[in-house]
Length: 101
Image (cartoon, rainbow, N blue to C red; front, side, top):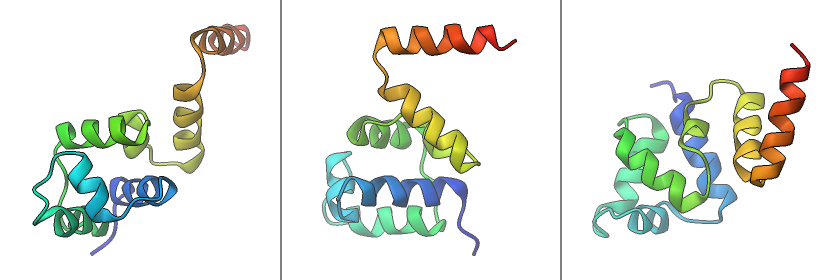
C-alpha cells in the first residue's frame, strides 16, 4: 500500500513534536487501549482519519489542518510558517504578495 501525503505529514509532524503514536492518540482523545494502533494505521495509510480528527491533531501539534493535506513539501512549509506568524507578520506577508501581482 502506498503511503499518502496525509500519512507522511502526520508522521513527520508527530515525530517533530517528539511524541509517540500512543501519546498523540491519547492527547487527541482516542481510547488509550487503541490509540497507538489507530495512529499507526493512519501513518501507514491503511486508514484515513476523519477531517475532525485531523483538526484535533492540528490543534495539538500547533499546525494548520491544511498542512496535512499539502502535496508539496514547500507548500507544507509555507503553510506552517504562515500559521506561526504574528498577525502583523501575516499582514506584511500578504501586502508583499499583493505587490508581486
